[in-house]
Length: 400
Image 1 (tube, one colour):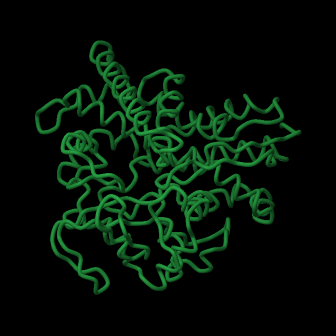
Image 2 (image 1 turned 135 degrees about the vertical axis):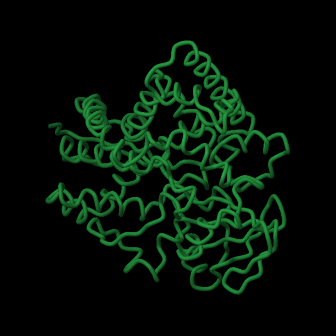
């Protein structure tokens, strides 16, 4: 078996499920060649992904960042460390507390009416057209619109930031050059700087105003800290939702029996269907950690400083945890998937909001566009990090 979990080509048709299966069965901790270094340890078993996620002192996000690829320069690493994603406890907890109250299950439920309203509006905008691109016209608009409202910026700006996010997540440099990615990053940081200036002058009841007024251990956030915090919230605020909705609809196209089953009992099955779509598609492929001291994983010695990469898609098909893991089952229960992370400090902050967004959009699509069908070849994201669709043409003749 040729194992390559790094290149965009390996993810051109989605996750490389056959490689994951081979690794779980033969090399659950695999010494994977790294084109930007000697090697990395690829982890494919549920138990190991979960364990590494929860041992933040032993497996660091801060030491060398969380991304796989060309090593960051010292200057780039300094900038990345301003983002909560690349922090370790206790620093991570101090920053997470600044915004966590806005993303609790209770707060998410308080947003439900607004989420449902946005979903109705977005599906209503395409209902009379007979066709659309499900990604750009539907799946991408709800999370970008909602995070814009939460941050206190115009919805049109939120949609532009979503476009920049896709550019930044492209890992195929024949599609998007590093120079274009840097331009997208700088545009987002400059925009964030403008938001900070505006919110300091005219604060309101939104997350951005909370951040510019926040203090961490008595010190206000610096301009750079605010910019990277803003970047994280905008990026993380939409990735899972827009990729899950489009991938979920494609799953229903591919499994008409499960689509019929879901529609026949939508209220009862929609929650479990959302969880199964998360498990089955695993929109975020992986994250990297750095071993901070010599340790052992499954009898394999791992030295301090070595790269350990946890693959969520592989863990979510682990035969030891999930019965019939390659079967798409909208009623699967229990379903302890790791699509929002393996637990611990870096469990996805926005997962409660994301679940509501996904369910609301799917409900609108399935009830208002009952004959929704493919209208052409879908195009996947050119990325080995975010697994989803860049475009998904669909058609419908009946709009309720």
